[in-house]
Image (cartoon, rainbow, N blue to C red; front, side, top):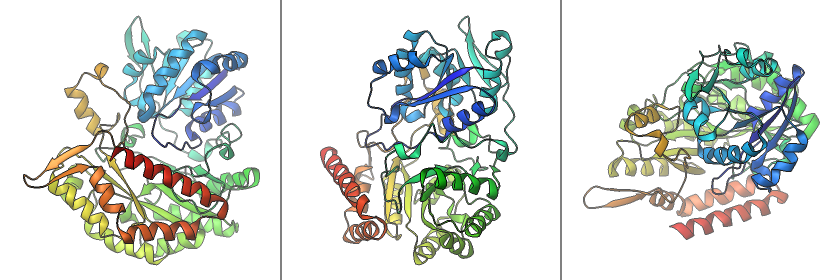
Length: 467
């Protein structure tokens, strides 16, 4: 038996609202099922500094420490690893960022090993054979440095049947310990918990890192397996709302239909949201009606751009013409529709930015997030970026919705500053303020209202300070 401590560093993003780390939960679930001892420390919800945590970690006395981080707070992983080195405990890195640039991650964090790609089976075999250094370095899905030379082994095969995975170790990532508004937005019921019903996406959008991590392979859990986990969450933590984190939940209609029917068959009184975004062209009235009947109330539309030309260059593979019809259909059925837009594509111009802003203003969207396009490690954009830059000299900590690195565009007569002007133009309209007020009143319970007002005021004050 090996004792592993799994950690997530602090999240260095303005107004961040951390969610339970599902990835660590899945790792803990499979490791414990095979007899290993697992602890999880999520620094994202802890007030202590990294040095203050050292006595606690010493008392746990793990054989090895595993750290994961997204690119947006990778710098925190480096800081955490630097502090942990004083304990002289082996460090393993994992996650999408590490998988995309394992050599740089190993060198900068001075880690012993990196798990590349889907982590459950690799980490399990690694812990099974932890005491034999020669064997563990031959495992599939492992990268490491040997005499300062980077070594990476062949990829491990993806898990074909996701139902064979144990549920996340929910007792170690208790959803009740996380903020009641995990996405910093409206929530209909509390408490809520996230789940994954599928892994992967067959598309290859240039800005997305998922395609490399999951190798464009789409796999799904059975409806019975998913709803068994949901019932566990309901019975154990009194969860009343589920947030589906899939990259492409609605890709296969039968998957969604089977899931909805299983929820209805068991008569579970829950609400559902898809905050990670859904493919708009995968929706129709029949599916939307069934999902609404099941308890779905919020679907985030990943529109990305109002320029068809930019969408084609980004390999998004969607026709903008269908979006108004589907959006109106969803609104008529009573859905809340948040949206994701991206500004600053490589060929973005004043005119394409104006197209995006005008396009989303013409839709009955409840709220939107204007992301700044970043060369996210693992994406095709990053591969192009890496060929032209020295990765050792760049800051790999990406902030997608920052107001501090504005993009300035002009057509010679007019100018626009992104995302500032897009935010002002979209939100500071009477109809949009009315929509947001109506949404808050209709969906929030009284005990949540105060939290929502406080968060809204924080956001307004922050925006005023930087606009």
